[in-house]
Length: 615
Image (tube, rainbow, N blue to C red; front, side):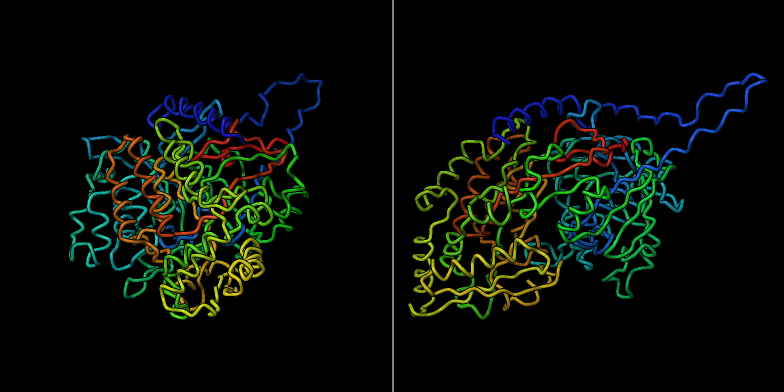
């Protein structure tokens, strides 16, 4: 997709967004056509009318590449559970398509109405009277209070707690409460001092630290991390010391409140969700059933799609060539930048944590080859702020298209070897390795072993490691050899933490949705407060600049661009991470699937959840 087309698309979307902001009147729910014709009285001589044929069940077929580790949204950084939670649970608000298919807006879900702003920093919302769990138990303000206090519990240290404390909005004292007693935070913070208050049986008040928009307030509470939990069931699932929980481990230990009911969970095989006709938003959803297959292998996905057992799938580098000209194929920008995290605490590598060694690895990445041959039709990049960062800002100007983003790109191009633009420079890589040797006093004939962590199910990881094994001994003139450290699927983060001696770099693929509004937020995953990513590559000046970005007044996008540039330059100089590939999304949709969106919309997608089956 050309920059010009993206710019036009963004401009159109931003104009529509002004008219379809989250406070606007929601569209009337679409009522399905009646399946029984109007009654008639036949003449006495005519035979009795036959009953119409039963309407075929509408089943939407989709997939996950990996199984859900838990339905407890606050307890895991893995993203797979976003799928069943989105279908089978309810948020306080929900994003739905605009009638014209060109944008989206928020409507109340568990909440009775849109949030009400009391003053500059205070908001209130009420839970709708009919809100209930799928077993009929009521949901009220106490449910919200129990959930939010549990998420922020300083003793449980929930992996996703920061997403409640400080994501789209920053809740007063929430961060200090969850991190009380740790470095940089008060020793004791009372729950009563946190900006979350119960006003009455159905109303909750939230106090934020800086002014926010209604859109940001709604977005904050649709994160899977902030999904409400069933208080009584959660209590039953807690360990005796209240430090761990089995909540969400299976369907006997979890319950939802969504437009679909999680009926069947065959681990590593299939999920089945059936429509909850009693749900207050039932008329927004057209499928009678959703089947989610767990399909790690791409060849299996291709076969399922071609046989009509998947309604959409995203081809990988090995299969995209087959479909690149297929009229069913759509492509759209991504917030994802594939990067390599660096281990700065490998006790067996004398260069671990050395800045010149990290720069050597940065310049040894042949990004063109990796993006073309390993990722397939992706884009090489030497920068970590993605190409869609800033797309949902008030001006709609992406950071990378601004003069600040372009200046960083020009700087990286100046570092690159002749004919390269993304930082690849074998000669510079070797020079930095020699500087690193001098820094730590290694002899010039020393051979460094770089251990690449590889997930057993990730082909891009395996193929990239093979490329490093072949090319890096040449680039570094025999002074570097590459080994792989194989780990089970989904275990990379655990192994990074438990076995620092076993790896030096590992491929990562996290994207920060908030970056569409605030470009610098991509680096949130590399700050010291984000403990779920155990690489510790942050530096003092990086932390200070991230804080400076957060301190910019809401709405001052020009300053946000300037401060984001400063942060990106620091991140490149300190090698906080090694960016390699800018993601591009490709997806095929079955002919029978009718999508509600006429275009891909950042932050919402194609709206397939609200689609229909037309045979």
